[in-house]
Length: 330
Image (cartoon, rainbow, N blue to C red):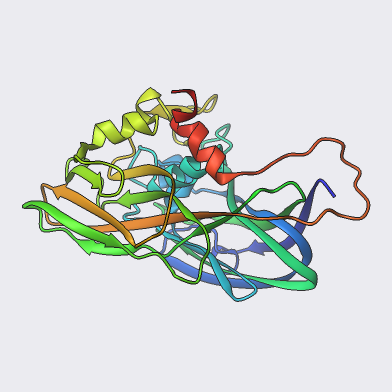
C-alpha cells in the first residue's frame, strides 16, 4: 500500500459552516465515514480570505483554540491552547509550537499573500482501522480574528501508510492553578485505557507572559529543577528551533524564534508509566496552567494487497521528538 492520500471531507462557504476562523469565537462539529486501513495521520487544509492583513498577525494555528479528533469512538487527539490572541500577537502560537514539537512541519502555512490564507495542520494518529467503514468526528474551536473571513473552506485528508511505526495519543490536558509563590507539585493525569509511554508534555500558560513559570522538575528524570531556558536548550528551541509563518509578516519566507511565550514542550523520551507524571513547578504569578501529555505506542500496520510503492516512509512520533530536540546527536 505504501502511502495513500484520501480526501474524506470538504466544507465550503461561510465560516459558520466550515469552521474557518472569523471575527467571532466559534465551535463547530463535523463527522464523516472513512475507509479502513493503516491511518497514519489526518491533514486539515484551511483556505480563505481575510478582510485585512492585521486580522491575523500570528501563524494560522494561533486562531485554533482547540481541536479534538475522535476515531471510531476513541479520542485520539485532544488539545487546547492556554491562550489565543491571533489578531494581536506576532509570536509563534502555542498550538503551532506544540504540533511542530511532536513532528516536523505538522503545522504550516503559505505566506505569499497578506490576505489569502492557505494553511495545513497534520494530526498524527497511527491507528489501524478495521476493514470496511470507520468513522471520524472532530470538534474545532477557533478564536476571533480582527475581521470577517470570506470564501472559506476546510478539507480533511486521511493519510494511510503501511510503514507507520507509532500510535500517537494527545491526551486531554490537566489544568492546575498555580499560586505564584514558589514551588508546587503537579500530577499530570495519564488515561489508564491508552497504551504507550510518555513521549513528552506540553506546558502552557494562560497568557503570553513568559516569566510566569520559572522552573520545572520532572521528578522521575532529574534531582533538580531546571530553568525554562534550560528546557529550551534541551529541546533545541534555543537553536532557532521554532519556525512559523505569518501572512502579516514576510511574504517570502518563514520566521524563526527561540521562544513561544508561555509555551514549553518537555521531551521525556519514552518515560514509562509506573505512575501518573509528577512535576515540580516554580511560578512567579498566580495563573492557570495546562499540562498536555503525549503518549506513543508501537503499532503494526498491515500491508496492503497491491503495493505500488518501492520505498517505505516510516512515521514515528518518538523519533521525531528525539530528532527535533537534538538529543539524537548528543
